Amino acid sequence: MTTNSQPRICVSIGRETIDDALAVADSVASQADVLEIRLDSLVVPAISPFLNAVSRPLLFTNRPQWEGGNFSGSEDARMGALLEAVAENAGYVDLELLAPDESHQKMRTALQQSRTQLILSRHNFHGTPTREELVGSMALMQDKGADIGKIITTAHSHWDVLRVLQLQEVAQQLDFPLIAFCMGRPGVISRVATCDLGGYMTYCAASANEATAPGQLTVSALREIYSLMGP
Image 1 (tube, rainbow, N blue to C red):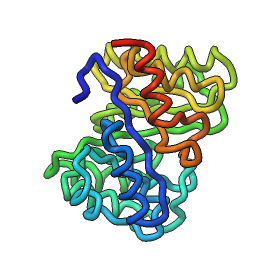
Image 2: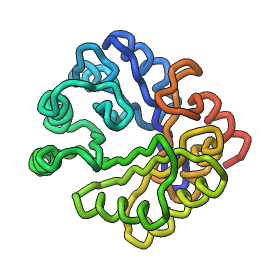
Image 3: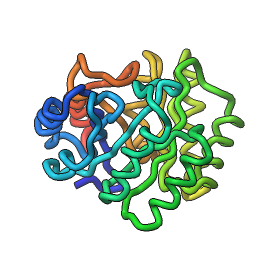
Image 4: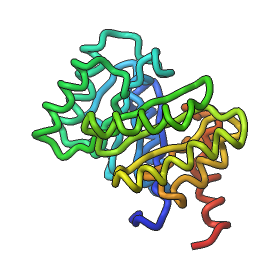
């Protein structure tokens, strides 16, 4: 079991069919602390099959195209799947910080009767904003009722990486659990280092050809790195 002093590893699963996604979940469950089910990758999104078959904590994400995901349907349909996960007391759901206000309100209402933890997320696939913008996003996540914040940017240099990793100092001051690292080749090190620097969780792929974001390591590679680093 993961403790506060150990990395919390989330394996992201983006398959088109429920059976394939369940097979991947089964194959990596022993290496994962959390399994992210990318509903936006499924041809027919569903919640119950995963909750019934998987013992690991589950995170359900239904990422829209406007934030780098695959979902292209209506916002009502997108939210319907996430709200079902909340109603079923899934471990976590991920909702974008920039989702419509109505979606945030529906989520807040549903969470009042649920044990699910809310991750509010912001992804930037082009670059890394200023420190002021990043801190502002974090504060807004907290104001909107997030249990955990998630800020993921694209790094073009080590300066971008340092700026994102330094957010953990502010998160600690705010007493706000934060997932924060960078995509892209320069950002790979941040995926490894983030948990040791106070980050709530890091994400990886089930295998080399299943990455759901640029620079995402495989769970076996990440576990090997942590093993080499020692206890």
